[in-house]
Picture 1 (spheres, rainbow, N blue to C red):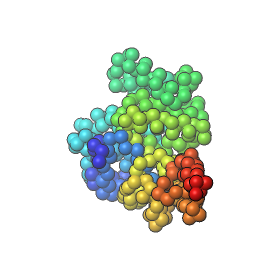
Picture 2 (picture 1 turned 135 degrees about the horizontal axis):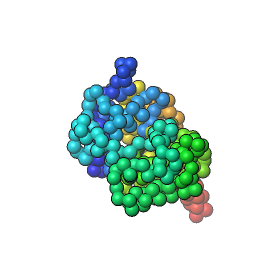
Picture 3 (picture 1 turned 90 degrees about the vertical axis):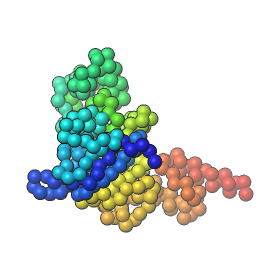
Picture 4 (picture 1 turned 45 degrees about the vertical axis):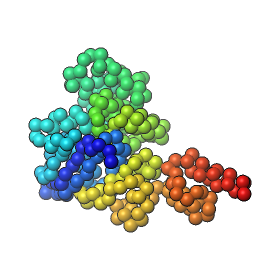
Length: 282
């Protein structure tokens, strides 16, 4: 069991209309985990993220960070450690140029000038935005804005990063870049939670899946275990990942090894090659 970094305990959040977006939600997140948060639109995923970093304050329940209960005076500090990449990138844009936008967070933290410059360059490089640095972010395409919004959070260097549908509006090249960035952030020890409808991405990337349904956590477990439950997927309006479906068909035909469960195309090819080599040796 990894060291617990943040925990939500019995969170209930109601909007002014009286609608309960979260009902008695409890979730413990370990340091360095890679978690996909899934569920239909309106299931409570975005509201949960905003409570987890202190933008919203639940009417009931508590947030604990590093074992300490977060009180009203601690929410500003919590935001420094838990960053959110919003689904709508325009919600994050406030500066006149890309470089000013990405540098805004570190400047607001009152960091030394050299550290601000270092973080700016690293974030721009991460998201391949060097050539965009002098451009106004509001005139960029949807995918380019999303890359800037991700760079915003990378420059802040939070311990936990919450991504709300990060691949929305990204073209295939940018989506591939995003996965590379997520891999780098994970290697750096960042704790990552990603809200996504993309079951194929979640299957190949996440260590753990948390499924929201009608403001509650319907399921929480290891990725393969979650995606192997047909009734759960149906209830949560999710589908089985294509790689898993292909593997199961090939397994029935004896064309792959049992128990390997590849998550990437090259892993599937290795499984099939292993079977072929065994047959040649017989």
